[in-house]
Length: 253
Length: 323
Image (cartoon, rainbow over all chains, first blue to last red; front, side):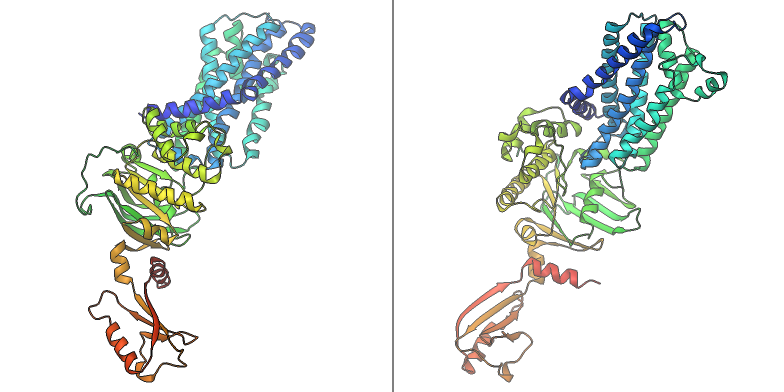
């Protein structure tokens, strides 16, 4: 086990986070604050409670999830795309470091950053709305699990992308719509029955629902199902990464 | 450079205990391009080996496979006795690579990027060693500079520093002096010699023949994916080297006297020089006979010089000589 190697990659990636503090952390916090002002305070004050939770509080877990997904994907994909783009990946490939260790370094750093952002948003949210966390351990578990899973997904996108455009297209065209339609701002029970069924094909529904359950004890789908679906997605990402390194796909001729 | 610990003492020739052993190595890229064809090569412990070849001959592919950047199609490679695939950790720990392209990070400091490399290769932090490398490479003043603020030559030094950060026993330099100014090239040669003295085996590719001639102990020539020759530099130059004797004549000749005509003797276009080609290795060079016969013909010369064919001439004739 090349612990020094993992540490080197992890610290290198984290250094990038600190170097780009404004873009990495300030901007997601700012945009989430805007959501709270507009949806939480301004519009939320005219909305009825959902499942006994005020609208402002109801959207907190969803908004955190939204940031976790986009930040995990963009940070992890960028982290592995850049060495490919600049050519410095030669060093990773020639180093005595295994695929798993490489992934731990990159994905670990991306997930750490997401957890930091999620926590900051959580604290920021508290300034705007009043909420409680019923299952703090599960809350942290979902926070970490989602960060890791979507950082893995981001890593795959970063390997797959061979242009900056492709790097942007998946987060922008697929993940953002899924996140918005995944019940970040509403309970899927509010949808007509047909669209409720459709929504169940959206993986984000399970993440948001499980995360919201950890806050308020209410969920659109059973929390066990949420957890299982998150783990399934994580395993799927791990399998894809295993395949990438086995075949050298877009990394190694 | 810091002397590296050596578990094995190099024997006189090193031939019995190669530090790198390549056998039956072939590489066909997905595009169908066959970059290497059944390459066998042994690098001796502690030598400077120069791999020469025209562009696209397969030099970089060969190095990339040994370093783990490209997968081989068939064949095996061992580095210091370790299979580079099955046993990649010990194999790669021993190898440092300075690739041809100037590929560096941009926003990191010199110190950070060199320290990163050391960690990546599984070594605990050692600021004293990094400091030594940076000083040796005249990078110490720049240790806190961002890499993107450095000149091309400085970036090249950074890449060398990265490759040396984990104290490798084998160093690959892929076209180390391409696009580098004279001063840096001299510095690099000095550094390479210093590394060799500390026991590091160095494999460099180049198409600057003078570099190979200046530096190498042995020379391999690769063309179209095949190693066409591996030879001790001096042996190679002796074996293939021809010497020429040029006689600058007192009075230009219109033509060679018929009795002097031979395939070894030519008259320059302006008739002012006689050029005699001979084999420096043979017992009888024929120079004495030539001079005597010139005297008989009353041909006087006012100056003479001899010259050896350079490695470049040898290289060109080798590569041209192949289909």
